[in-house]
Amino acid sequence: MSNHTEAPSSAKGRIHHHIVIVGGGSGGISVAARLRRAGVRDIAIVEPSATHFYQPLWTLVGGGAAPREASARPMKSVVPRGVEWIQDRVASFDPENNSVETESSGTLSYDFLVASPGLQLDWDKIPGLLEALDTPFVSSNYHYDRAPKTWEMLQNFSGGNAIFTCAPMPIKCAGAPQKIMYLASDYFRRKGILASSNVTYATATPAMFGVKEYSAILDGVVERYGIETRFQHTLRSIDPGRKEATFEVKVCDETKEVQLDYDIMHVTPPQSAPDFIKRSPLAASAGGWIDVDKHTLQHVKYDNVFALGDATNTPNAKTGAAIRKQAPALTENLLARIAGQELPSSYGGYGSCPLVTSYRTMLLCEFDYTGKPTPTVPLLDMMKERTDMGTFKRYGLPILYWYGMLRGRA
Image (tube, rainbow, N blue to C red; front, side, top):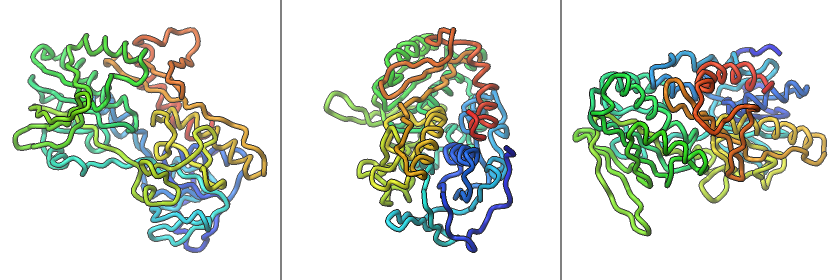
């Protein structure tokens, strides 16, 4: 199937579509491609961005191991042929009347809705963060324009306090805050300044990883680099003038504040469901995430609405690998719903985190709703760091993404 489409539509002359997909990220594009392969017609994707990003590459960009341009392609090049791209933002949902209100293209009605809008980065929720990001000493790989700055920051660092933060869950790619820390530590080692660098991981989580088997392995990585871990530390504010970060710390049933000085700092911003999802009828009361059955991905109230990806309330890790498994399950169930049949497919919560632990090695963490390791690579011991997986992270996974997942083939 050719992977291009016509110029984006204004949608003003055609307001009804059989299937409306909200979001042109990995979830929306993957489902659209699978639906087209199944012969479904009259599909529209509502997506405001002109560029599609392969965000997992931004860790390597921040570590100086990949150019940021390799992570970006024009949106029109990834929207499947035969799918109408409406370049607009969603303002509100009206599932009782099967419609979506856009900001400038009017009202879109649908027979079936697929929601995959991703989540939002709440940069403004930490006082001083935006100001700190304008200095040479603070950066974040969670943004296309800031990932190259991370590499500049690491190159200019000559020793001192290097802090890497992790926000409270849920966040997308929960391993990303660690990945750049390991790359930075490996770079400091190669540069000969690791011994004079105080690398600190200040994380809101209680351990290195949510799966104890992988957490134990990562404890060894932390020890190897001499990284100081500060668990249950949530970043609350930054004073860029004093280069001081304030954290809320949970100790038993009490909380207190601590201040840490930094010479450089990589920040993971707080994250949440998009505001237009939070205030919609699709959202659950807790957290504002889209309320779906965690196995079928069908909305719990509106049976012609399905959702996948980071904006749902499914209790899996918010990773691209999760979407890769959700997309075929959702598509099969949506096709069955269209045909008036029972939903046949069940998503088991699979997620994976390809955790780079140096410039050469990677630990592939795979797990599901049970919280146990679920390795899928045959014949190889995946419960350790591997150099072949490091190569796969840099070259294999992008190929799988662009030519497999986004085309409905993987």
